Image (tube, rainbow, N blue to C red; front, side, top):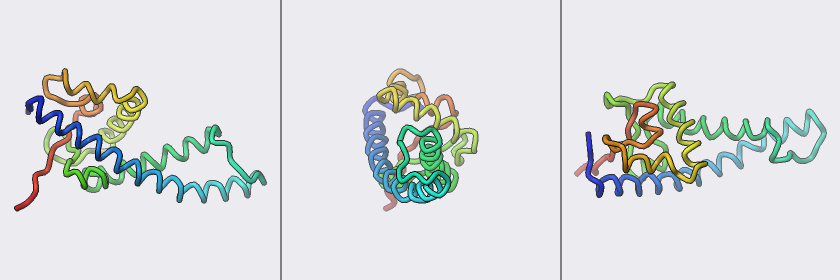
Length: 148
């Protein structure tokens, strides 16, 4: 399924908008779910604060982000932001992503975001118009038109 460049640009804007919606959701989750970690950390160490550079804290936060994405994609193929912008992550057969695809897509997507979105610009040179996370995970993102 190849798309025109203008359709790709529209899809990329939708991806970006969905990403920012999801950032708001994830920040809220991270704030709320940091409290149990802080309580356990205080109970174990007696310290009143956790340095953000603590590896265990960073892994805990990353686990929360992955959990949000995993549960969203596993259940419906969409995060809250993707649902708002009517896009969906599917595999090449049109079905929901499996656990391996979600892990690959999340990992490559995270690296892509850390590299200023480089993996998402891959879609402009890819013959199938898929981003690098989609290519590696053998998945794609589709637009869901409004029901009339």
